[in-house]
Image 1 (tube, helix red, strand yellow):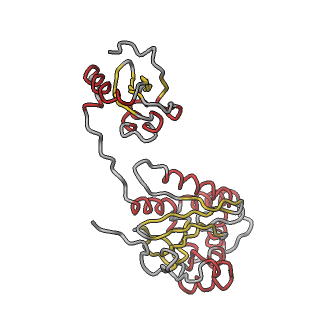
Image 2: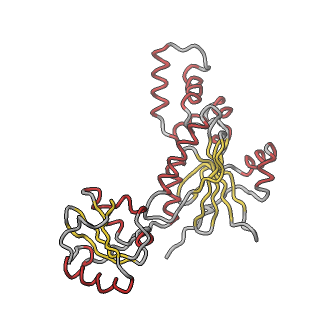
Image 3: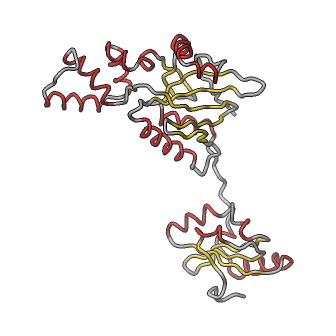
Length: 311
């Protein structure tokens, strides 16, 4: 039996993509302890998605894990693996593989909307057809001054959700331009599209200063610096709901934020978000022909378009 691994080729666990394509007995070792012994007819392929990888990665965070291998003929693999397991008694060879708890796509979509609901507006729903799934259209609001920042922030949020290892849910960026990006995903037989929309939004602080100034002083005029700073602090401390209520009660607020002020709250994937009314949607379609061409069957949201399946 092997007493010394120093003569065997090895790589760090993080470098496993560089493993050779050969048949071999492999050893996962940390701090001179053999954690796992296995066999592979193709070593590189075996470690692309190894069932013990999550456990070894957890160990690797505390101490470095290395993969050693001993090349051998395929007809020797089974006997050698059994002998080395009996000899070293590796810990992971004697334990069951933990079951992977998959988070349902519905929950991941709900998480997405919770993180985005202060920026996202429900535009409408396109019914299913022979060629397309039922499609939910969501718009993320950003004016031209902040579109790049808004897109970057949104991208980071969606990438963080997509990278969660215990979920099959994915946001895919299908269009990437300087004037905004487009994403799509699918959940419970529904396609969800996220598109940019250039509009002042309630969570944009400078715009809300004008609304607060109208409430406090009757107009956006020259304001003493101490009072202006106090007003800014008050606006920044306001929640989305408080800002919406203030904007709806203000003439300038309704002019600055026509979509949000006129929209209504509906539940989408279990999350309350603002959705365009039928009148708002029809007005929008009449002003923007490209929307009508792209989504000819779109209609306003009046109930949760993403079904929650019970098991």
